[in-house]
Amino acid sequence: MIKALLLLIEPQRTWERIAASRWGVGAILLFYLFPLLALTGAIEGYGLMRWGEWQKDGIFLKKFALPEVVVFQVGQALLTLIIAFVGAKLIKALGETFHGRHTFSQTFKVVAYGLGPMLTMRIFDAPSVINPWIPWLVGSVLVMTVLYQGVPQVMQPDPPHAFGLYFMSSLLLVIITGLARFVAIWYLQGRLPPLENLIQNLATRLMP
Image (cartoon, rainbow, N blue to C red):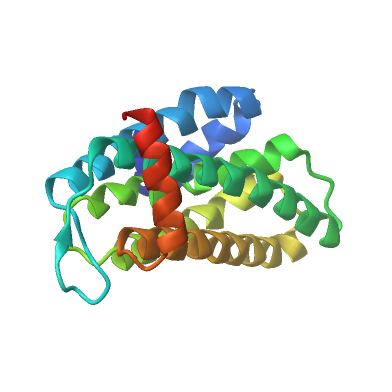
């Protein structure tokens, strides 16, 4: 989370350190993404148990049990990791259309650190009084802000193609995370009965 905050406070220096680091995919997962997902997931999960989430049209508040929260947060973390890997792969392909030759490690670094501010915003999902779309919207703006310097410093595209690659990469991540956010919100609001039943069944097996 500290690195995600530094990207907002002093983005240029932070991206310079990230670009110069020798961390590969494994190190980024172990020392950055996993701890960030665990921390934000714990805070959001506590909010779901303590304050709950408004169901459907705001008729009533549902407070979630611990097993259901654990299954949901693990699933959300896995979905975030899938987004990171798929996003990195797609941005690598985008870079090639802009005549770039980037490694998967470079694009994964851009995606993982670029998503940091959005993942940090999940802590504001804890209170039920905050519309769940607001943290995502603010996070999307922050992602586009930090990637403005991240894409050129890490991927080092040709200057004529830098803005196009940045814009397409940012747009891609916003769309993918938006779809994932839609599924998460609809589940929490009781609008996806099949997914709700699946998670409840898994939660029952976890803690019968």
